[in-house]
Amino acid sequence: MKAFIFDLNGTMINDMPYHTKAWQYLLNNDLGGDFTWDEIKPQMYGKNPEVLVRIFGPNRFTMDEMNRLSYEKEKRYQEEYLPYLELLPGLHDFLENAYQKGIPMAIGSAAIPFNIDFVLDNLNIRKYFKVIVSADDVELSKPHPETFLKAAQLLNVSPSDCLVFEDVPKGAEAAANAGMQAVIITTTHEPDEFKHLPNIIQFAENFNDEVVKGLI
Image 1 (cartoon, rainbow, N blue to C red):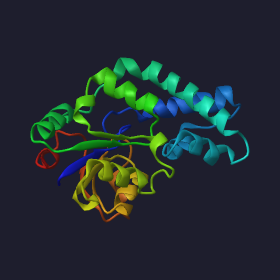
Image 2 (image 1 turned 30 degrees about the vertical axis):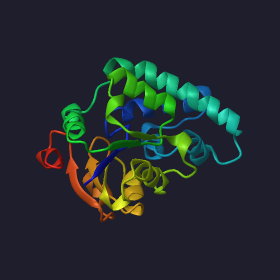
Image 3 (image 1 turned 180 degrees about the vertical axis):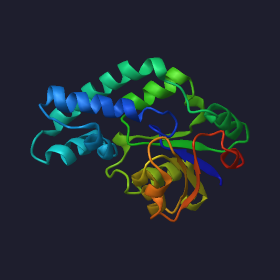
Image 4 (image 1 turned 90 degrees about the horizontal axis):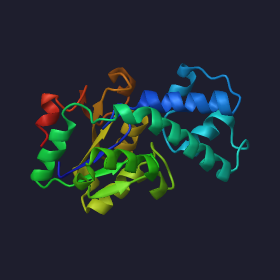
């Protein structure tokens, strides 16, 4: 492959339980809900306003209200996760090796820049990524391919020459819709949840996987 595109949350860092916890607090304590962990977890994809619409319907909040709630949720997530913030095992070496070999890399995430900056700057890994595509940069969220197609375009690489690293089925589906193969990091979902997708070349617990290391 000529380029790598990484999802962020759950793929580069194992933070999805902290996102779910922050959502659960917001939905139940601030918005009067009574949602269980298992009810919230399947909604953890796409832009934050989309999560609110899926849970409450399209008429509960204005866009300004959803943006405010989104920011409050992310502040809570960052405060709780910061002491535990770290890359998945093997990822720093993977990024450094790819960087030294001149393989262009991008982040293609449904996270807002506030959260992407939180990770890149606290872990000092911004230099590895030529392109960052966030929630603010696209109209349509995963599984629509816009995020990954835009990353490929900005990297000046054909979509078929890009390899995506993802952790959720909707993200892997977005890669398939973009004509890209994908490696699945199994932090949040089991391999059998991806069995309907034809573009998966490897499942790996982390970046110490020998097949993953051999991709560079």
